[in-house]
Length: 394
Image (tube, rainbow, N blue to C red; front, side, top):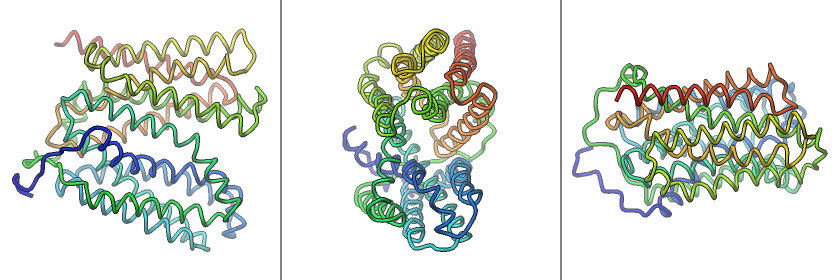
């Protein structure tokens, strides 16, 4: 694509969010809306629970690993073709899942669904990097996309349960397919190419050897890992120990995402005042404050809204401050290969969160706040140490 063929992005921030958010939502929704029917699927497909669990694990694995493939591809051929092709594959596999009755075919289709989701996610975030690099609007968009992605786990399972109860489990995948077709049609009409006209030689070495990349990716991993561990432990703490009903739990869970969305609306002014490094440092400090409040509640209070959810509101604010700036900090030096850099950024974060987050839950138990406290303390302090080293090297 020649330089003259690349159109200038003229959409406002709200219009950009309306265009990009569906792809962010569908990526997570394909996992979360499916959770309520997981216990039903072994009988429906004539297979074992282990095979059905595999469809969850493989989706997450391919979603992260696939970005390593699609990032460089988007740098070579452009964001638009990767986005449209990935979404088309996602839609087709969703419709085929709705009609599947074979366990092996179901597993394969879930893999294809994850491949499509991975391509769409890479193209979306690479486009943000192309358009808004160096502009304060990028912090607002990254923060809101992160908040939306965090909100889906709160409403996705409820939606899945309601759809399955009224129309059966196949309708869940039919709904996902229809939503993705709508997003694909809208993007086909409005999403134009943003890839830089001149693309540098694609290589992971300069990215992986960049100290700022690792510092800011560590901050991103801290923020997303905090939410991952909260998501993993909250049901056992709030339902099993605090006595919340399933519905009550869902609404309480949603308040955390609401705090994140409200905070994201304020990040632009704070990032302009504090800068990228200053905003990340304050985000890590807020996360540590939330972890301290969780530790206090765990030691001196019974499991409750006050002891667990209120500190998580504080942590949610820190998550937004971090996720609003970490992509800019990590990817700042890689504008010509943004697709590759975005792919590595998300893949590294997925590995850190998946391994370290799971390890903390396994070692400290999933029915208390200690895994979240431990993870935040270790990773936030590591990020702050990295930021201090960056300041000294300037």
